[in-house]
Image 1 (cartoon, rainbow, N blue to C red):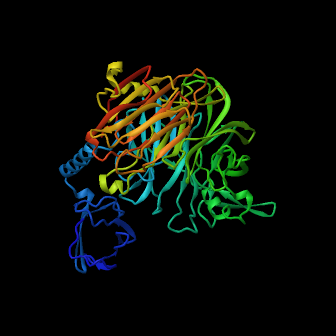
Image 2 (cartoon, rainbow, N blue to C red):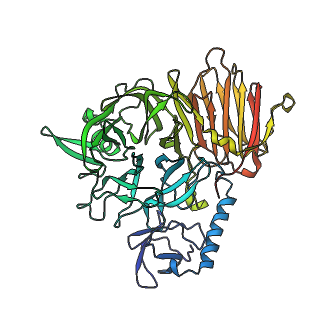
Image 3 (cartoon, one colour):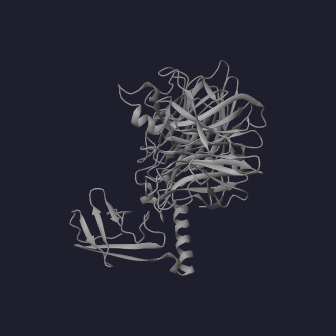
Length: 585
């Protein structure tokens, strides 16, 4: 985008072909025919990324000279095949050169991955299916991209499962369900249509059969919004109830009936905040719906309610419950037996990913244990999960601590945590990266006492480190250490504080630099086992399969920040591996 002699004033500017666009210089947006195009004066590039314009049009350059604007554009289908190939290759190679783009953590393959919630995960016939939320630049709407894999590492890309419909803005998050006949169903939060009276939006369902390339929407919404999008009003015994009508969970089947939760963000925002708000609309609940045929749904009641507000870091009245995932837990990492316990994964928009573990009694969930996966902010966000044929409860989360304007700066955004297995044993939640990640390990180096504080690793920007410490004193590692020692990310266990800590305050000059502390304590006689994943801008740490922290970091000079050093105690054993790339680019 280029600009010349720009006065800095807002105004309508006439385009060369007769249309008008409006420039908002303060927000740096350019508006054209109700479609928004990012207008960034600091850029001088020919391709306008993130152009919200009709699919058949591709704006190449915007020239501004005094009061006249000229748009140069053409139809995409008119591009010669050679040019399409050249543009695609240039984009891929740009991403390959990016020093912050992860190599083995899934990243949105192209376009604007914000929001980038993982959605619609299901497993069938040895194949893992996963959807990802992103904004499609051709439509300006939220789409669900669709990928599949047989190893949780290498992903095949399918046509988008969900797109805009009749000019709406697409959809937000939801879940997936596989019925006995292998029909897959996606539940999602649909935006209102252009005519909000005839299509106020709400919870919708789409379905598909193998090979799951095309998805068909149900004719009517499962739950329809009322005057407020994300809220369904229902009269019960003469009282109008404001029901949750957002971010539906996965569907589950029980006694021949189908069940689905809805998230409460809009109910809380409109009816549950403030001193005078009705107590039944204050934070931490979901509403439950059921159906006999997946088409007509009825309200059941509250699926659960927080009875421990303000106790042991349970959610408070200001926390919404969104992106819910409700699945059973098993008693070992794989091939386990059912425990009778269920996990409710969810987020609050203020504090990120968290969970309940409890029992399902009839049509009511009874939470017994609460935990968080993000403590100081909301960097770990928007969970999604599935259960596979080895009884593995596997989850992903969106790592949200993006640098400012990262899509405009780098041409991509949207990263997930490594797939994580969850199980329930010894009265608590256990967790570990999926074992498939071991397939990417190479260039093994074992620590020796002669190495001292500096740890040898083949590739310090993409590696895995497993270490065992006595854990009697501070013990851990600093990763992505710069050559001058001024930047680093600290990961360690503090026995005095009884916390697992990741300190990113010296990690670089971008991102959310913060000291994150997760509750964790070694038992008597227990050694500290750390499993650390480093992947360019992603760092994850797992401690004794009981606690984990995952964040993103941005070294100022990434090519010079590949060192690894010890913190505190010397390890009993320590092994490093370089990690091979599984992302295609």
